[in-house]
Each structure stands twice: as C-alpha cells, then as structure tokens.
Image (cartoon, rainbow, N blue to C red):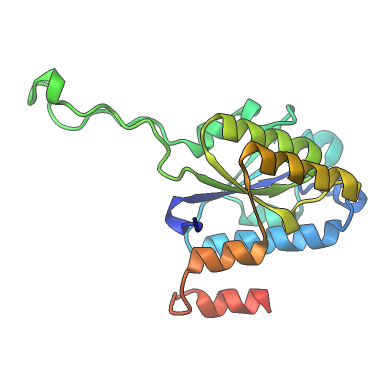
Length: 200
C-alpha cells in the first residue's frame, strides 16, 4: 500500500526550541520535518503542528511553525487528548436538500468519517509525545505512518524502542523520501522538480 496525497494529513509533534538541543541527532530530525512540511505544501496536504507546554519548552522552530496551518498547544503528552482528532476529522455534514424531499429511510446519513484518514506523523520525543499521539490516533481508527528519520528522542534507545512499539501496534514506518516520492507517484507530477531540489 502506497501513501496517497489526497488522503493524507501531516502532523508534526513538538519540535520546540528548548527541547531540540537535547534531542539525539535533533538537527537532522528537524531538517527532515521541515522538508516534509514543504513536500506537503507542494501536493496540497494539510500540515498541523503541536507544542507541548510552550511556556516551559518554547515554541516550535520558527521555520517549521511557519509551514503549519495551525499549531495545537497541549499539556497532555498525547495531542489526541487535547483536541487533535477534532482537527483531523471534518465535522459531519448536515443532510443536503429539503428534509421532506425523500422518505427518511431513503435519506443518506451525514458523513462522519474523515476525508483524509491517513496521518503522516513525526516528532519529538519519539517515545513520549509522538508515541502517545500515534497510539491514540490508531485507537481512533486512523491510518498512521511514522516518519522515522524526522523523529527524535534524547537517547537513540528510547527513539528505537518507540519505533518497535509503534510497528507492533500497526503503524507504518517510513522515511522522509519515501513519503515525498509516494505523494508524487510520478516524475511527471508538476511538483517533481521542486521536490527533487529539496531531496538533493
């Protein structure tokens, strides 16, 4: 199964200015997160950010924050517990047309499912906020794809343990370039040349 840009949303978890210096290979994780957000904009994938207790940990990196449509301020480690799911799932649509135009048994129910059920997610710390958010999104029956080279923890062991647990729970593990090329699908995509500049 390949990622489909039309069904995807990107969530970037807690790349915060006071946290990133302590993250193992944090500079590379942040650089890949920024590239992911740039790829997402090229193919019209919504980008959401989260910040954990920003009064203590600071805001997200400014370049990354500027690429997010909205940033969720949270106190729970899982962004899903502080309202992220409401952003990812569109509100139910009211029935269209005159309610009396069709008998009740022929009226279609309002759509309640997500229009973009595939959540591409990356963040810090991988074994805390990223892990808990991804696990709760899986519980919400969303498809979760974790971008491993855009994730980080203070230690490599904690990061890798998070990946093991997420894979066991049903998340797909991918890399930044895998996401980019699957969103594009073809070298004839209008964004291919711009994407290639970011990759090279």
